[in-house]
Image (cartoon, rainbow, N blue to C red; front, side, top):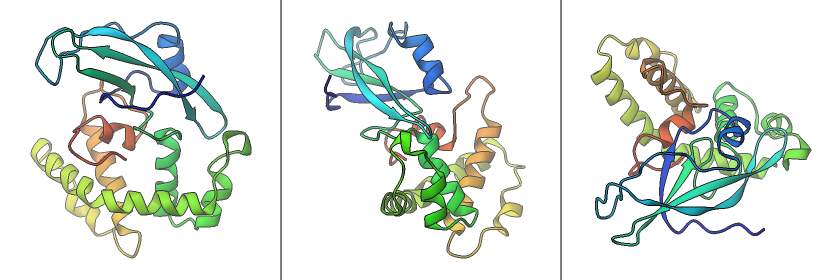
Length: 211
């Protein structure tokens, strides 16, 4: 079955900490909750089928159903994406985040490419790793600013400035983003568990760039 392009509005929700957990819950049935139409405000969109897409983990390629809702009033459509995925990306968020974290810790591009994924999961080339890091660098500054502002408002006593002395050199932007994100995740309510920093951020604000 060919994958359907994502033309609808996208909502990212924590529907399972892993691909396997999501498949156990929703492999053959859609999530049972109400969605308000983001276009016209209709409080109850109706379920509108599903399509299948690939989810590439560090070890294998899995097929997962992605469910849709449609508004009876204005005909707007909404796709509900589990937060271990990002729009238009096949590799799950924890794999792409792992590349960024390894680089922040001092790994070389070749080390990351050779150890991030097995060949059964399509592997990773150095070119792909470099491309992912370039995209993450372009987005990390804006996310770091948002996370630091949120953290200072939510937890004024957070050790934010004590952490900043550790961020230096060409990898400092990634180090800051990881540290800030981990502090925010630790301060989040226990019921809002996410399978990683990328997934956590992608579920926060739709107007910030997806990771």
